[in-house]
Length: 93
Image (cartoon, rainbow, N blue to C red; front, side, top):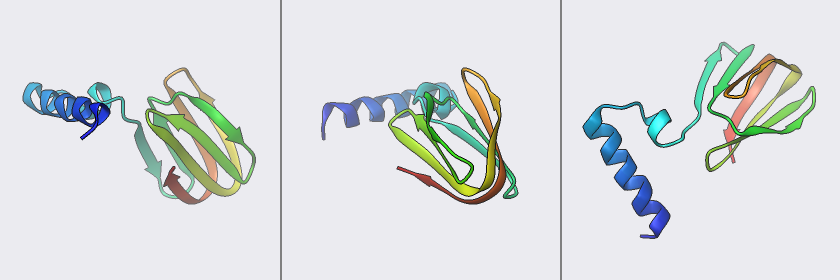
């Protein structure tokens, strides 16, 4: 078990013991999807790539990739963004 794994385990146990939300303590993204037309990503670290067919967003330990048609960024805030369009897939890279 590496140092990073140990840190994550301790943070997770702390989060559970103190009944704190995991997305805050563990620096995880919170993703809310409304059907296949709207996607909210909270706790992101920035946009890596944006086209009308795909959006890649940096998150804590990787990235989230959205693939679809006629995609557009509706809201871009420091801690939240909204992708709208016809969403075909969502993946974690």
